[in-house]
Image 1 (cartoon, one colour):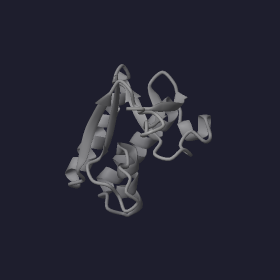
Image 2 (cartoon, rainbow, N blue to C red):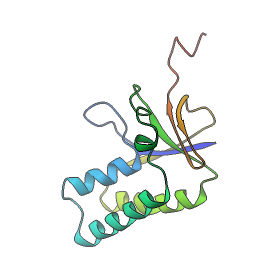
Image 3 (cartoon, helix red, strand yellow):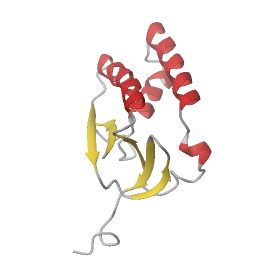
Image 4 (cartoon, rainbow, N blue to C red):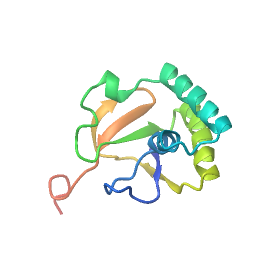
Length: 128
C-alpha cells in the first residue's frame, strides 16, 4: 500500500502538490511565522539528511507528465515526520487530502520508503 498527502484543490497549473511542496510554498511566499519557519527549516534539514531525494538520486524521475511521489505505508518514521507538516498546513488553513492505493502507476523511482509513479492513463493502461 502507498500513501500520498496532497492539496485538496488543484494549483494554477491544474496539479495537486504534495505535502512538502505545499509547506515549501508557505515558506517561499513568506507566510510562515518565525517559529514555524524555524521548525520548517529544521524539519527539512532532518528529512534531507535521512531520506533520498528522488530528483537527485534518479534525475528524470519527475519529468514524466503527472509523476507523483508516494510513501510506503511501512515507512513509519517518515509518515510520523510528515504529520508535523500536515499540522503546519492545518495551522495555515491549507486544505489537503490523503490518498491510498496499491497501484499508483508506472514506477519511475523506488527506494525503501518512497516511490515516484506516473498515474495510469486511458487508453494506454486501461484497455476496457
